[in-house]
Length: 115
Length: 110
Image (cartoon, rainbow over all chains, first blue to last red; front, side):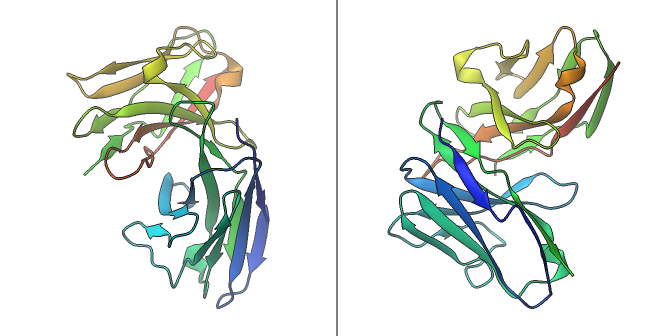
């Protein structure tokens, strides 16, 4: 299975600032997915990142707020911009696991607290 | 629109009792269905997928197209089964993406 390294694992940030979350995969993958898990809630897909093209955002998420980079097939970043306390969540990246038919592997998550 | 319903936020059972975590889906076409689990302080991980008809850690899940359900079952709960469980159908269409249910926290009481 693919192994994902996600960092930072947690951060406390001031409102109005931005945080960039990184995900590194130990193998080349076509698509990487970014999720948000708000306190007590399930996972919500933010966007899908393909290498060499702009990310595809889900309803309710926009590029200005959550810019994503995908410079190569093993790496992606998600930036949470102009943060407010409502952005306090766990953010996770995910990739399709080639070893498991349509199964997905997840990063360990970034717990973001905005104060 | 794709919709997944896990009606129970919390399910408490005694050790050794049977477990059934419910999942209903609203879907067009034939979904690929998965269960994911998150143990305390661990990352979310795939538990099982319906297509493989496998049993993982004693858990099984049967796809019932008539009832549009994909309940997760285990005949005898163990304390180490305590975790958060998410039902997750894989989307059909342009590209694959996973829609997660709201999750059920399973608490196995010793």
